[in-house]
Image (tube, rainbow, N blue to C red; front, top):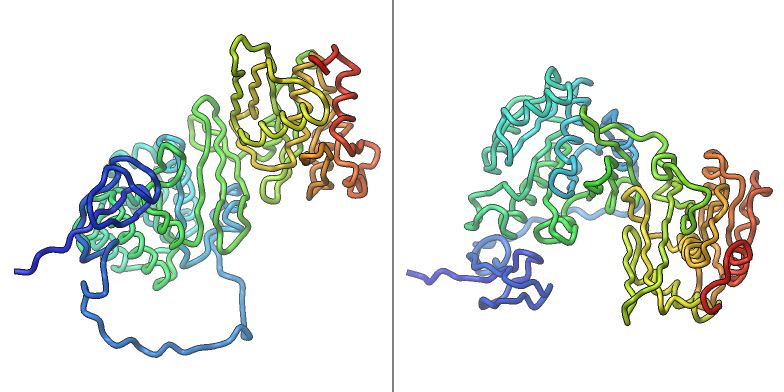
Length: 464
């Protein structure tokens, strides 16, 4: 009898090794390596399966007739915005998010809307019983929606069911970590099973033209659990983000073969499900005080949408030898860079102060254009001088202390004007983009100009 080949696969990154070890050499995770068969899935080699002569594939050229990919408009405006106008037929999407964030609620609402439009929609749950899904639909007021429902985890049974009868327009599978296929000998949730199940579902989507939406769990680091190869196989990856302390939920596209990336949709969780937020800028600004220092409004861009958000800073004397630096919603390394530029180029000292930075509303921003707003909030908190309520800020700060121009300045200014802001502090090179709003933009060339402006209306900066 032939000896069964064994391989050891990391359940975090999918790396394969010849022997078991406590720490994965690829991703550095501890206790993530499990023993699996090497004759299927991850670790399979050329000798593990019988090979046949391949067929000749016809070759063509770039020149030829093209057409727009057909889409299914869901009717949920924010979801359609993130996907680029609706679900593309024959595409596969991966939706990830923290437990309880609202992934199942969002997809239940979307499937119900499509079913009411006449599309054949199938919802398959691997985590909940049929009765539990019905209770959610009843709570959302969608009990009468003609959605086909099943609770199953076998990939072979799911595909056989979908092949039978009318071809579905949309299939939702919740979640990929609960599915298993008898083509591999591994428990559900392992790298081998997740990869093999995803491959089977993607093949079904491409062959039949059905849109397949797969729900994926996330790790403690916020990444979708399982091998990253699953994200490469699908056509789009959406992350559902939110803070448990807030009712706001953000759907963010990080990959989309048929539309823009980095687009966001904003929802608000309520007793009757997720509601679309038509004006997220007003939501993230909230109530602001004219006498509180350390708050600046940043005019940002998320995808194609201009978005205004409040950045809050607190600079307080530190009793510690090494002051604290705490950041929520922004890049910690970028905050360190801004503090260093303020000290080296402007003489503003933070060495004896704790610095806390927060992006209001639970939003996470990644734009370098937020540098100027962060610097204004820090200077305001340190000097005790509140910033004018009518001001918005955007601009990138270089290591030399210069204020660099950013893209989409006109859209940022128009959004600020629409929400009642009458002044904007922007890079000097962006003044030429202030068409239609020239009276509200004030240009800065150096960071020292901002320091002088804020400090003149408040107390003297520490050791400046």
